[in-house]
Image (cartoon, rainbow, N blue to C red; front, side, top):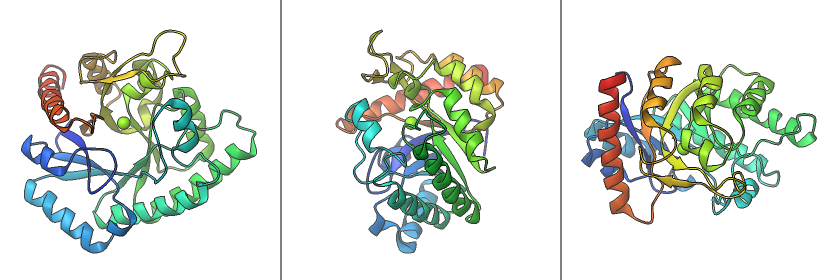
Length: 282
Ligand code: MG
């Protein structure tokens, strides 16, 4: 794959992301996909989706897990509902994530990814220790499929993410870096964070956002905005990706499913912006 191949976050049948048609219409050569519902995670569905991608000349670079009951309504709800962190659903979701890894294998994809949730801060707590054990169990399954797992950034600081990766202590755990999330969740300056976690970054999102007002960061969402219009600083972002030696796809994410027309227009502009920056920096 060429350096910094453009990508977009897409869906098969459910969850976040644009329909594959949008990638096709905009001539985008790679996609990360949000895993489909359980009933669609079949060999037949995989074969059908792969054929659609092949016909459109699209390569799948990562499969993201997502779960029923997750809600990003506000930060407090996100803490309670997202990823493997909520204890009531942890075991079931680890099992489902293994099935998503199996589905990704059917798609010939070596990268699975997810928002693990807000990793508990107390490294001595039973909750944290159990999360480590569950993540190791998941990673061993993922490894048996010849895959690695990338954790989406944003819900914890770069330092705590590094502690977590070190505590899990498996060689197939990496990072999907999303600079806007650091801003939206108020977890730290994205460029500083990227420099810190650089050696673990195996995939990235190109997304932009503006900080919540001083005083409410980490309690209220910042605002997701079209690429180049927020506080990330896309030129600095790409320069920093260059510095850390990242050459993988640049996957655009624009999370406004309520307005599909604007979403598509914004993604089109994001492609233009990234292509011009690639020419300048790449
Ligand atoms: Mg993201």
